[in-house]
Image (cartoon, rainbow, N blue to C red; front, side, top):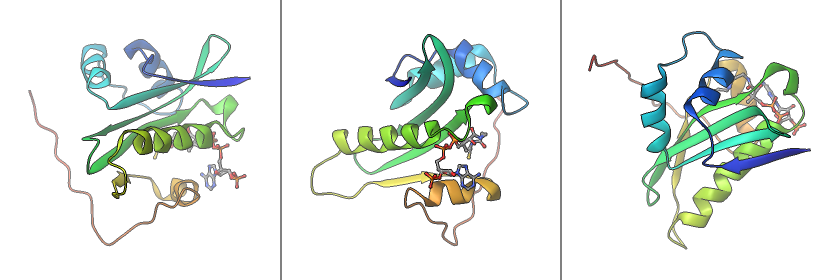
Length: 135
Ligand SMILES: CC(C)(COP(=O)(O)OP(=O)(O)OC[C@H]1O[C@@H](n2cnc3c(N)ncnc32)[C@H](O)[C@@H]1OP(=O)(O)O)[C@@H](O)C(=O)NCCC(=O)NCCS
């Protein structure tokens, strides 16, 4: 049985889950700082084994950004991504000001857009601007 837990994701688990689907995982100390400052992190466990993760950053009142949604390849297509997005949206609802709307945003590669559309996300004409800043 898959269980989703909040705020137990470690930097080491984040990096392992990242490396199951992407190259170029961030450094451990940078990841640890980012997880500590996320509004919520999720880990999907099969027993003791982390098989998925997701997190949201945000201000709780007006806006959130969903990041790093990953299900390891051998567990994809089993509904775990859906469980995690549902749980992120539940967290946002639980912690917002009742009677208001909160913007929830994310960035997706074209082949993942249909996945997010299932949860009501829709693209608009805005383009993402990004730069990296050396610290
Ligand atoms: C994208 C990802 C998180 C989806 O997780 P998942 O556990 O495989 O998805 P689920 O099994 O919960 O699927 C939920 C629904 O979305 C659909 N879906 C999943 N991936 C899809 C895709 N790429 N395109 C269209 N539909 C998709 C499923 O068919 C399912 O539909 P249904 O509920 O109507 O039957 C997973 O494939 C993944 O980790 N990919 C690699 C990392 C990645 O690209 N993350 C997204 C960053 S933007």
